[in-house]
Structures are given as C-alpha cells and as structure tokens.
Image 1 (cartoon, rainbow, N blue to C red):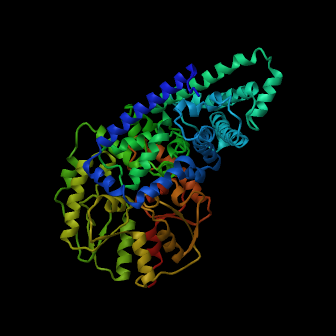
Image 2 (cartoon, helix red, strand yellow):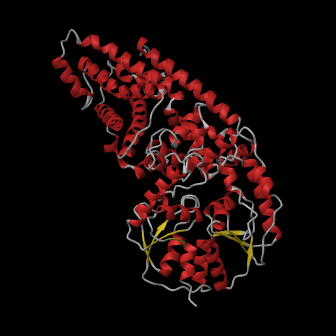
Image 3 (cartoon, rainbow, N blue to C red):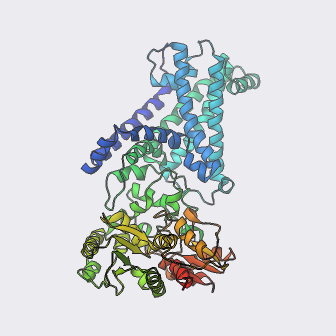
Length: 595
C-alpha cells in the first residue's frame, strides 16, 4: 500500500519543522543548566521520582487534574483536547496495526489512515472508537470557542490577550478537527464505512450532495486538513501551545528538585515556556479586580519575558501575593521568576542600604530564644509590646535581635532586585544569630519568617512565627489565657499562608481566646492587604483602595474584631476597615493573659 499523496506535504513539512525547533530549544536549555542542576538530574533519574513524574505527566498534561480543581468546565475542555487527541493518535496507531500487522507505516500513513484505507475491509469497533474520540475532542473545541466568546459562562471574568502566533495556532486548532470530521465523512459517503458520526454524516452528504460534485470535495478537504496540521506545528514552538511539550520535561525536572533561583538560570526557560496562557491567573489578581490594572498579570509577565519584551513597569507591578501562583495549573514559580527578572533588570547594583546597616549590633538580653521583630513590627510598636508581655508571662528569657533597630532580614532588598546586597545582609545576620547562641528564632513578621526559612543557612536554629510559638506556649501550659465570647475574623497574610503554609496555628490561638468567623475568601484563597513591599508601582491611594476591599470582606463576617498575624497587614487593613478594630494576633493574646 502506498502511503503517500501530495496533500501530505504540508503536514510532513510542519511536523519536521516543529521537531527540529523543539530539539534545538531543549538541547540548548539543558546544555546551559548549571552543574548543580545536572547533579540533581543524574541523581534523580534512577529514583522513584521518575515513575512519579510519569504519573504526574498523565495526571496533569493529559487529564489536567489541577485545572479541574479550579474550574471543572475548563478542566474538561483542556482534558478533551489533550487526552482526546492523544487517544485519537494512540487508537489510530492500533487501528493501523490491526489492519496491516506490525509493519512499518510512515507517520502520514497513521495520521491520514482513513484516506489510504478505502480499499481495506472496515472494522466497526475501530470506526466506533475513532468517531467517539473525535466527538470527545470536538466537544472541547466547542468549549474553547465558547470560552473566547462567552468567558463568563465558563467561570472566567477575563481571558488572555494573544500574540500573532497564538492566534495562528488557535485558529487552525479550531479548524483541525471539524475539517477532519468533514474529510472522513465525505470519504465515508464515497467509499462506505464510517462510525456512528462520520458514517451518519456521510450518508446525509451522499443524499444531499450531487454525485458529480461529491468527488470534487474529497481531495480538497484532505488538503485543508493537512494544511491546518502543518500550520499548527509551524506555529506551535512560537506560541502558547509550546506548553504541550515543555510541561513534560518540566514535571520531571521539578521531581528531580530543580527550582528557580534568585539569579536567572536555564531552568527558567522550561517554566516560562510551559505557560499555556490559560488565563486562570488573571481573575485572582487584585490589581485587575480592584484597580483595573491589566497586562501586568503573570500570564503577560511570562509572555513578555519569553519573547524578550519584558519592561520594568510590568516586572515591578505585582503584589507577589501568591494568589496567581496558588491557582497556576502548571505550578510555575511565578514569584521567584519575578524576583530574578528584577535582579537582571537592575543595571547598577546599589549597596547603600546594606552599607548603612553593616556591622550594626544593637541587640539586647540573653536567652536561647531570640526574637526578631522585623522592620514592620518596629513600626507597629503595640505588636512588640504584646510580645514582651507574652514572653514575660511565660517566663521566657529572650535575646532581642532588633528591639532598638539595627538589622533587616534582607527580603525588601530581594524584592527590589538587589539580590547581592540581600545576600550580604543575610550572611551578616546568620553570623549575628550564631554569635549570641540562640536555638530558637521567633519573628512576628511573615516576610522575615519566609526569608529565614528559605534563604538563610540556620541549621540548628528552629525558626518560628509568633503564631506557632504562642500556640506552643498555650498547649504546654506555660501561657494561661482566658476564653470569652468575643468574635474575631482572621485575615491570612500572604507570606504566612500561601508563602509558608501556616494556616492552622493562628486559628488555634484565636479559638483559645474567643470565637472565630471565617471570611468568604480564606486560607490559600485569602486576599492580599494591598500594601505589599513587593510592589513599587502602585500609589498609596491604590493601596488604600485594595485595603478597603479587603476590609469590607472581613467586616461582612459580622465579627467584632479583625485579626491578622502580620504587622504590615495590620497597618494596611486598619486603614480600610472603616473604624472596625484591627489587631495583631499577639495583641489579642496579650489582652487575654490570665493573671
């Protein structure tokens, strides 16, 4: 059997072009990985992580479980296109083998088998399966078209704006399967066969279309099908659909513990180009929902970075609250990529802030427990005073790292892109902690907590947020508190909740002294207070607008008092709470200590 026809040329050329571009990209990215990443890969390949990665590829690249969790309708749409197309290819190859045995068949022979197999006897089982899978994929295409036209009915307020290559790939993707349906149906009309879908449509076409005209539709439809496939493959490496292939190696590399770093690395390319630009990250962004600021969301940040068009106005205009990262179905490390983009875009390193604090030790007290207030806690002295009362009531001897000021955790420097200065600050602080011999480091600032745990080398020193520490004191009986009927609602700080996965401890402390009422958006979906030190673009008035939106949601619980566990959040929400009391968790506990 001859498996060649002129109409196959667009498909063959497009597939070959895509393969060459993909190989060049992946070889280039892998070759430039640092030696430390290579060691992780070599160690990871023979481990169980490879098998777990294979299962994750099936679960996420084909079945899209994460998208299902966010939006079941979108999950079905993505699954029907990805898994449906995969099954069409797989069952098609099995069908070819069932007809011809295990002989060599060129790629186009599998793809256009219905065209080449008109002289072979029909196998009803495969006709049914292939029609069923084609209908499955067509349902996804219909939802994809509906998503662009009626996004709100699909549970999305906004969809992504696409570039030229996205539009090319998207347009032909919408055409590929309807054209295939027509081509196979016309083939069935002329030669018989077909399943419940193509066979039925073929019978209808044979009845309605002039027998003289019908053969003239046959070749052109297969040409159009081949051209659509070829165009899609040519556009794919330069469009959002690059994620189809890039997400697979990304899954394995993450399983081998590769991560984005403070400095850009070749691994970042896998993350940037694994973004499908699905737009799920747009709706959670409060810059969009509260301030109507568009084109700075993570989907556009990744797009601009991928194509080398990233501007500081986009890189810097982000709260880095993690709401988009929490929703991202690919699990891209969006905040870290923002940070290393800012680092790269700083033309001249600025050492002034580090130099100002270098060598300053204004610590006081003695104890195995150290307390690091952090810059924002020092600007909210009632939190510091509350912690003093708690330490005193529990009989804890404390070393105060910065009660009189003098040090900074370094996170603000990182957020502004000054990673080299931040690293020097961190090294100085580590030496300071070691010098005073502490074994436990407590902080009231979630920003400090996150950087201590993730960026510092504090082996042998336990790092705790004050919510964790206070809960431990209460449970051990070292701190006695009164329980009353006062109602509280709790705001999860971004860096404490999504950033450090601390949700239960603050709630346990609140429930030890009163009644907790949850807001509508809580835990991993909690709103950002709007005053993130990560955003250097929005104005004070815009920050206040976000704070008022958060304040309204918290007040809607009917609670008497709003509680948070971050001094920055306390200051921000207090501005937008319309007179309702806003307290830090430590203040609530200090007010309810038993004599």
